[in-house]
Length: 267
Image (cartoon, rainbow, N blue to C red; front, side, top):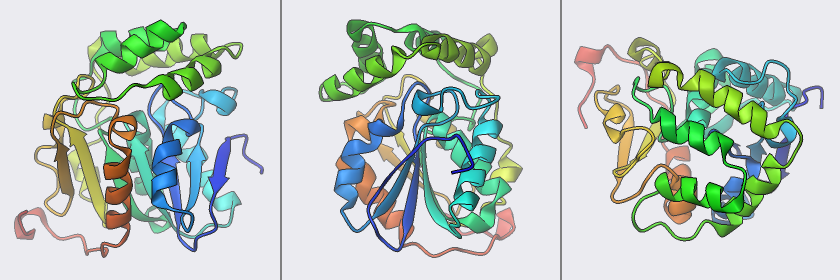
């Protein structure tokens, strides 16, 4: 590949699902979701710039850099259209990717996406960025999850291994500081969201301690919003079966024409 963006590819299906993890994660966090999507699904699980095997990607940090990198990688692979899924920071990257290359995105599934409102739990994310030991990582994952979350042992092991790479911890601290400056995050303007004509599903846990679920309020009427009761921010790990089902369902929805907001149907 021309790009230095790392991608883990599985499956041989005719439809391709591109998966973008959240801040501090890596491609491997999608393991359970990928298994539930079934062997007929072709998946591309990315390590976003500054994370994992994409640690040294030039200019890593801003979501716009990641979006350009994803688009470049899709083009290098000769893919015409993909079903794009993003969690948290990866959700913001997914939206920016869809805005920059709408012809390449067949559907958009956003899990507690970044950029939908200014509120963000800066102290928790900065603590997570600097977590190095297994116990510290597990404590942060628990703080970001709902009350009924299952153990995160596999995920924590992978994240600890990732953070052992030279320069990884420092890069995460740097990205977190920029992303949560003044305990606010950058916001994608609503008029830009109105431009997204592909099927869009937004999923949010009611107990999200990182990004409040109220950021899903007042979205374009054609967006589908799914609130997950008692789930926190770590939806991939907390409810992989639900997330896999939502991705597949959203892939089968039809693209609608963009209509003026006043003429849009409710619901």
